[in-house]
Amino acid sequence: MMRLLGASLLDGTGAELRTGVAVEIDDRTIRSIESDGSTRSDATTLDLGGLTLMPGLIDAHAHHGIVEVHDADRTPLAVIAARVVANLARTLDAGFTTTREMGGLDGGFAAAVASGLVPGPRLLPSGPLLCTTAGHGDLSPAFLPHPTHSHDRVPGLVQNGHPVDGPDAMRQAARNAFRHGATQLKLCISGGVVSHTDRMEDVQFSVEEMRAAVEEARDRQTYVAAHAHNVAAIRRGLEAGVHSFEHGTFLDAETAALMAECGAVLVPTLTIARLWMNDASAVPPERRDRVASLESGMSNAVRLAKEFGLTMGSGSDLIGPEQTGRGMEIGLKADLIGAMDAIVSATAVNARILRRPDLGTVEVGKRADLIAVDGDPLAEPWLLADPERVVVVIQDGRVVKDRR
Image (cartoon, rainbow, N blue to C red):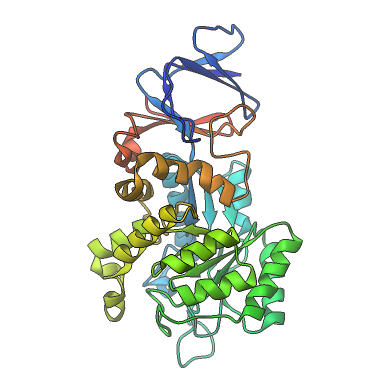
């Protein structure tokens, strides 16, 4: 049993900061939140004086397994695995105790983290990015029948792009993803920024193909998330029953209203847009013109989501060998809609999107995932982008970082 004393409490529900409370943890669960004047002789005390206690952060759009972008065919699998492990550790160190893996890692790494073999966030893997032939996520060379390297799909390690065409092929791919430990499915239903054979305006997958994935997911009491930059793709996805739409770069008012009416959710990814704007070398030269409108488009989507009451999560979309700055998403969103909404988006709202009611807030009965930060994130939301200011991280009731 452990008592956390002395911190201000920002519980993730949208309530204002509270002081003078003690949070008691027992057996991975928050057992009580009461006055810090009460005492318990049988509890270990953790003095968090001067810090702000809040829920563990959640990244709803992670790609821990996409660590090689340009030189995958020359990188040993052992190096890729080592980089994945390092990125998982960085993520936990930054205060993210849960991430939804949106194409990259499969259930093998999720099991390694869950068993304590690898430090990292609780992983909710999607399996591979299910995509169309010649669509976003298809890494096959244009004039050869297969990828030139073996790193695209290594069961138990990484599961990147997987082209499927037709409803029957979709059902088989979905079932294989679940066999490899997927907790939800990920489809690429529009073109992408770094795609080689499509445009961001393109729409991919038919309603029938998407619906096959949605039905397979529903049969397992879960859902489909979809990479979608343009509104035509989003509207087709809504018709098929897709639940979570990622990026939403070209969202308009009519589509935002329709998404809200359908109960769908939006997960913008402002971080990768900002990083690509600041580092042109991260994007192939022939695709850099697509980056120019990326952040402004997503910023507009964030404002529309707030205006129309659309449920809006928080995701970083980081890729590459050294994934840092995951907390930037909260700062960037706070600049648009305010610190409280940005923080709730990365905690309570993300937990709802991920269908994990045990996560996302500091409340009695919830999972004991908490962080203590140096400063007031309501006054200074960008502090959450600095791992040095994440002083304590508690995951499943265990202290996994303590820099006091």
